[in-house]
Image 1 (cartoon, helix red, strand yellow):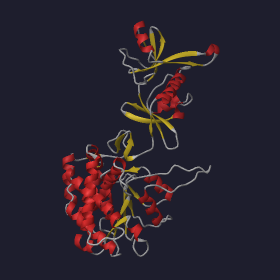
Image 2: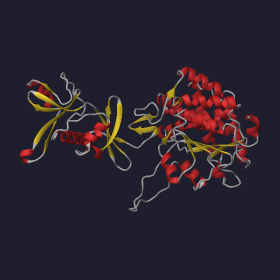
Image 3: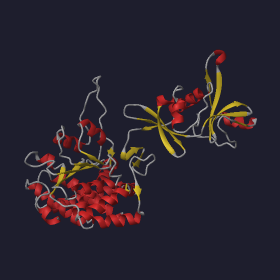
Image 4: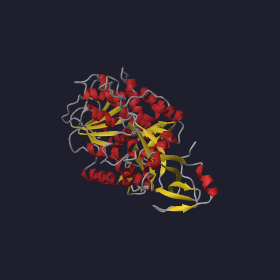
Length: 465
């Protein structure tokens, strides 16, 4: 079986040049090479292609090797949900994903030149390189090429975020990690409502983690920030989004506008990374109720393609944050089942004043993508059974704290427990959220739903503003 990893050699290969070797070295290298014949009849030319640390070479004779292409590493083959195949290569520290068809002889030179890799364009040489890479695609392990934001479970659980190569999310810290956490704590200390929003966003990572590792039957849920302008709703969403990526990254902060298929396609990337929808009740042709049901179920509805075959369904596991001046869901229009799927924070103020709001915006514009990876690293280093037990203990405690229960209490306790448990975890990482106050907020939110009032109204607004 041929190894496609580069073979160490003592010689150097200049572009369009060659190197001398002795017979002993030729015999050592020959067992790692693949032989191809390009052309037919009298025009047929043989190439013995070898991948070395000096570059791709042709073992032209027992005494000489010739340069074929610059050195790059072959990483793996990736296949997406439509069974399209790609070759992942790394050149000068940058990973490139190349479609299989771009490796064909008539395209390979342009494909590699585009990323700075030179190839011998003389007769047969580039075709031999194409044949070698096609052989690699057939032999290398195949990985899942679907874009994932957050957790990916392929043999081992991995976090695909800002610290992954290539990065799926954006990360930048103008401050040191210690100064970043200190400033984040200063900005959120005076606002339990802002802390609630941040913990609801970060609960995405815990929710997806427990559904993967412990098969916890937890549904996705949303948090809707309802109120007039100048209460800091958008600022709160941007700070929450900045835990995972830049607030300018549409993967984490976007307008709630588009077709249902487009929104579901974007959601399909999210497995532990929240998404924030700003101005979510602006005019949109889709049914908000239908979207909420599909979102909380974690997958889009079944559909057929043009050949009457079932299409692959997008699926996700995350929380969503919504901001609006009117209700996303309410008891007068929707049934209690859909209200339980969205935690509504009605009339809360998230920023102290205009100065506080501007400070948060300036902070998130220069510091983002740190906390999500920090939380994921904490979970990867933890025992998933212990994390599950921690969550279940919080859930049982909340159920005991509810003065009265109803048919929705079990579902509500699951959602609230995700937020409260996440708050406790963030505390261990140096992010100072008041877990006890957030717990009180959850109890009040539950009480108001059981009274069939607008969730989040009255008591929560009076106590936490």
